[in-house]
Amino acid sequence: MSRIQKCFAHLAAQHKKALIPFITAGDPAPDLTVPLMHALVAGGADIIELGVPFSDPMADGPVIQRASERALLHGVGLRDVLQFVHEFRQTNTETPLVLMGYANPIERMGQSTFIQAAANAGVDGVLVVDYPPEECEEFAAAMHQHGMDTIFLLAPTSTDERIAQVGQIASGYVYYVSLKGVTGSASLDLTAVAEMIPRIKKYVKVPVGVGFGIRDGATARLIANVSDGVVIGSRIIQELENTPREMAVAAVQTFISGVRTALDE
Image (cartoon, rainbow, N blue to C red; front, side, top):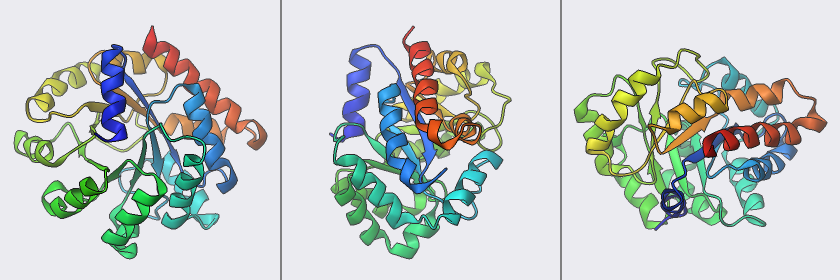
């Protein structure tokens, strides 16, 4: 059983939902990434999604695009991201870590090299936006052999056939994109999410986390009522953009703490 699977099982036993915050590695500065990861855990995060900076993040809205651009200006690449994970693991061996990004950096490194390096660093799962399930069965199998999960996106436009495809290969959890559009969009339709989750669970046996458009504790709580976990990204990046560097870590911990409290009420 992977760390992600253990985490969801533990939460289910406590009748709690997973809080899954996202930050982009290297933003706002490389030396803040690991302290921010620890702050997320201190604030109540159950799983961390760590974004791998990429020049053309097609699923991401302007907020996370800016985060990627800032990280790339600092020269942060995939090997640096794995080093951040390694540093985090020196003092935290429990919190599951998911790398979220795009195929290009992995393909450039080579899948087998990446999988071995990710396992060595302490990664627990990977969500590659542009790896469709029908094209990465071997990748998912190799990930599984190294004790890591392969996570896939589902969307409001996903057909039953596509959901079933994902259900056959996904492990850890699936990430349901709660709206049509990119990260950071504001038009969250709770009714539509509540109707979609049972459709997904008909074919998918792993937990379902919901993201895109979740901006505060109240929204997170509503989404948690119909899902297994909530993913928050753009709102955290905005917190970093609007906070002086020396206060960034504390500000993120305070924000996540508020969301955790709302989830547990």
